[in-house]
Amino acid sequence: MSLAFATKPAAILLACALIAGGIGLAQGTAPADSPSVTVRGQTYTPRSILARNMGTDEDQTTAFPPHRVIGNVYYVGTRTLSSYLITTPAGHILINSTYERNVRTIAASVAQLGFTFADVKILLGTHAHGDHQEGDALVKELTGAQVMAMEEDVPALRAIMPGGKAHPVDRVLHDGETVRLGGISLVAHLTAGHTRGCTTWTMKATDNRRSYDVVFACSYRAPAPVTPAIEAEFARTFEVIRSLPCDVPLGDHPAQYDMAAKFARLEPGAPDPFIDPGHCWDEAEIQQAMLTAQLQSQRK
Ligand SMILES: [Zn+2]
Image (cartoon, rainbow, N blue to C red; front, side, top):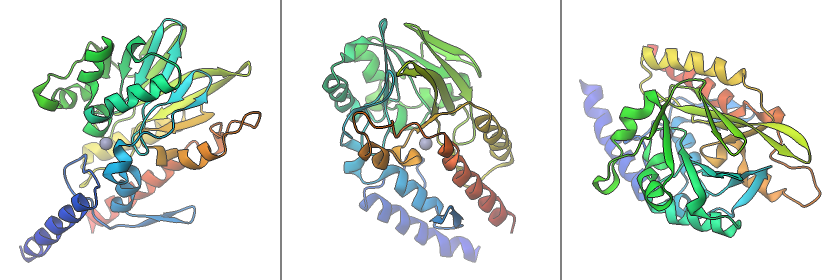
């Protein structure tokens, strides 16, 4: 009882501080500043991970320079919210609309790369949180794209209704199903935990006549508290993701794969810095360590 009285004002203060600091709380609750874990010399807390992922309001809404990642895969998102364009001769696939207010920024990044936003035929997402999929209805309105989503995330997606717009879902996907367009195949892997239908996408990209396995990772950040159901989902998820072939690790927040540092190393004629098989599971390692620490502190 006394604990509840002691922590409630602190939680409110934290929420206010985070909002004042421009950190959007996609999950609606302020994360704690403990436990902390150290992975490869870096120390993380639930709060620092969210801050790293989201940055400021300006970071969430300012376009990062659009760029080719590998083959026909392009980055068209903001500084902290990833959006990927996969181009094909039959039209394009977009992964993550992000916030609705970012959709026109994404469209401008697509145009800057020389492509036409209206050619987006399929819209996919990594998970049913507003910072990744709030803009789905607007993307569909502007492009006519088919919106496809993992079954387990459909209820949460339906609840995301910016301005009262119904959330479109044209095709319901199941674990392991393939989405095809213009010779490109994307496989949807259920990697639940962060949300019930969190989806990690894989595809093969060809670059310089070589084929590379690209992994568009979902967020693996555990919510608090971790329920037994979520613990079980993550146990499966961390096994699944490490079984995926991977040359090019990507994520739904750029910090998950060190995008800015890799982008800075992009140079014509130099090796593609996004080919980074040695660091495919770095983010999973951080999140798995944090999950373990959270479970330990919950059991105290
Ligand atoms: Zn999320």
